[in-house]
Length: 261
Image (cartoon, rainbow, N blue to C red; front, side, top):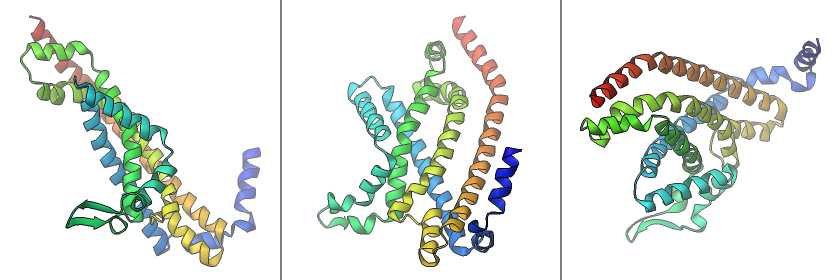
């Protein structure tokens, strides 16, 4: 009952100007901003996964320098607020005027646009979380299986591809999906550096017509939509990998059984 009254009051609130919301819901600038938000999030997540895979492998190295570097990276970029990191990336020209050496150098202001700074900041931040997620996936595979693979004469790379990764991915997928959903929402922070995302476009519009709340309703609608779609995709992937877990377990049991003979 109370929820019904709240919904009714929200829908009938004339100050929300639903007609304005309808006018801008599919407006070209909003659609461009929505596409930019999706592109930013996908590209940053892809780079973050690559960073996570590389550093997770380095973290398993016997070299203490590599392990220390990984710990320092994770500690720095997990501890640094994303908004601060984005501002640092956007203002990189203040402490790195040029990138490169000698004649093969470029002005940092030319290279680091709002979009570039957004990709760098989001990727570095997300990469720190992906390192821990991927390492947790690797650690979820019983050490005895790697030892059995070693007894069988399998090289480390082959062991990772055929034994560790197929099992670890079932542990990695759910938190990665959660991280991507968080990244989608956190991408709105790039509006402070003019990243061209959904919120940036809405701000440009209501900066000229002063329809602040209706434009924020438009932004909210599209964020809720893409987050819901991403959540459905995550559930689909989780179900797919959980169904494939059975055959993989049988394969591992057979390989370990061979090693014990």
